[in-house]
Structure formats: structure tokens, C-alpha cells
Length: 253
Image (cartoon, rainbow, N blue to C red; front, side, top):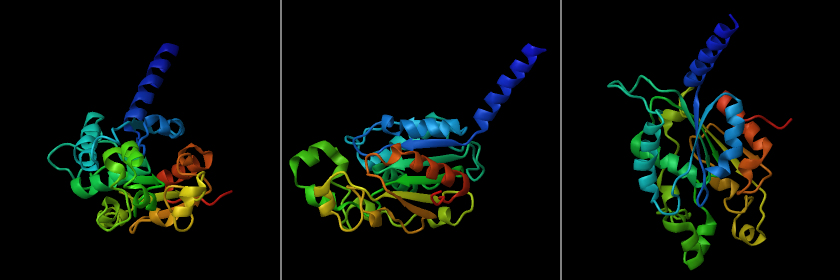
């Protein structure tokens, strides 16, 4: 009898895990999945299936990441609806949590590929949704171009730069109570006084608070952390968990 209870318990855990929502984590430029590992642990403890991806952010153009690499990864992990009727999800609901340029990858993917039927909620940490003035300043500086690869130079604030060309968050997603709601977390503390002096208004040292905002978003909040370390703080994790659960951020206790 004890063995039977153990077997039934194991089967129940497997069924629960397979039916659980999935959270896909996408890091920023020049980083790896390790930079999202703390968030991965927190979300796994909440019962989510977590897919923490590492992608070639410096060598593969953003268009290739969004149109080819990301869809391939979603298919490989069984996260895309299948069957002839794509309006009926046959895959778990998929949320995204992104840092910095990872948010631009998701925006470009949605623009070019469309929102899948099983898209859940999206939380962006410090996304350069209107570009970064640092890119405008450093674009012609050879070490910057070397360090940021093929994508860093494209994250400026000019109308022709990629972030500003993507338009608002998809209206069909933001209007739905269950699909594609967007929450954005910005930081307003900098570890680099020089960079801060180049950025107009409050910033995290790389992206201004104003630049993180995006028309069509569901909610926005600002935390007192820097760009690089935003995802490592417990308060950031608390706000992410709240938005994935309730589609809104929670005021500080």
C-alpha cells in the first residue's frame, strides 16, 4: 500500500509538472543563461517549468534570433501549439521573462511571427524599448562595437534604429485578459557616473526609465537597482511572480 501511494504520488507530480505553465527566460546582450539563474530557481520553486535559454547575442543578428532561433527553441521544447487549428492551444501556456535586449528579441519575434495561441504573460527587465543614448554616444567607438557585436550598434534611439521601428506592444495581446499582457520593470540606480551623465533623466546606468516604457503595456514599475544586477534582487523576483500570477505589480510592503 505504501509503495502504491508512492507510485501514485510520483505520477501526480509528473502530470502536474507537464500541465504547468512554462516560463522562458531570455538574457541580455553579452550575457548567458547564468545571469538569469537566480530567477530560474525562484520560478521553479513556484511550480513553473522554466526554460532558461542561452543565445548568441553578439554574433547572430536580431532578425535571425527572432525569426529562426527562438521559434526553433520553442518547438524543440514543445512550447508551440500544433495541429491544423492554431487558435486552439495544444501546448502549455508560455510566459516570457526577459532582460535588456532579450525584450527586443521577443518584440521582434511577435511582430514577424505573430503571437502564438498559448502565449501567456511577458515581463521585461530594463528593456531598451526606445533605444539607449549610450549606443548613440559609443556607436563609433571600436571597443564598443567589438564588445557588443552585430547587435549593440542597432540599439540606439534614432527612428531608424531597431527598437523604435517595432511599434507598440501588439494591441490584440494587450487587450486580452489572458494572453500576452506585458509588465515592465525599470531600474533607477547606476553604478557608472559617466554613463549616467549621458542619459537624460533617471536611469539604471544603461537605459533610462522613460526608454523602458512601451505603448500597450499593462503595468510598469521602477525599482532602485542597476541595469546589470536588476534580476538578482529578491524584490525584482517578487514583482515578477506577482505579474505572472495577477497581471499587475505589487506596491512595496
